[in-house]
Image 1 (cartoon, rainbow, N blue to C red):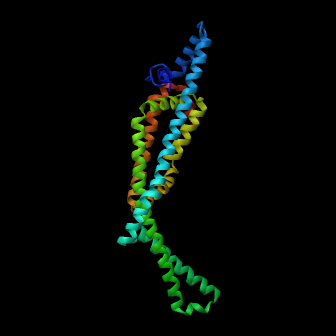
Image 2: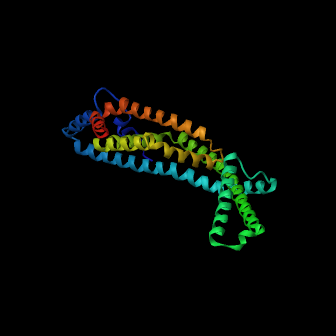
Image 3: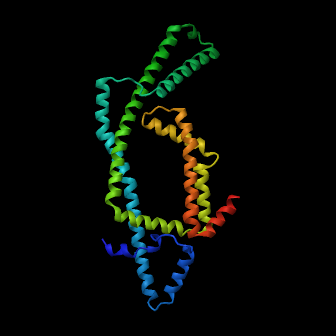
Length: 279
């Protein structure tokens, strides 16, 4: 491992912003390097450092993404799943973890009854007069729903345990890999600030419209429902609407602060392009 490379990794990406835009300072530094006698040697050295930075950053990023996911799936299906399934069958807990599951189950059963009655009615099936036949079908459907939501409740417990395990490992990797994290931060800064002004403006508009735009509340609502259902939490409409009315506003404020505090100093032309594209 070449530890000396860390000292040579594009220090400009780690420096604090100044009154002069970074694009101007980088152009001046590039011109200054080109007129030095050993410019060719420095260019080769910078290429080696950039290659090392790129390879190390991609490896570490993939490690941070893949390792927790693999650990999550392995711990869920090979460690927590047998334990939870055994305790769930042994203790025979209630089918539903929250009122939202009950409402969804009752709604599905009610729709099944209405569909059954409608299909028999339009088909002229004489079995519609046989209440025992319908009760048998409804009873089978109720048992099916009970098994389905029992499994969903057990999966929610497994998800909580496995997600906590993978999150702990992810935090441990971040804490113990400060050096690699520093290289990754430098690499990402170089990639982001190395984009053209049009590309920066396009990405800003894309992310702001996606997460804080006028149509984003529907997406946040779906995401929150999936997350709450993933952990077996009640899908409270009040909580969802409160989150949607506050979090995107906070996120929009952060975006604007970043544009004003950092991007406006690093690349004023990108901010001007963003404003023109956003009009």
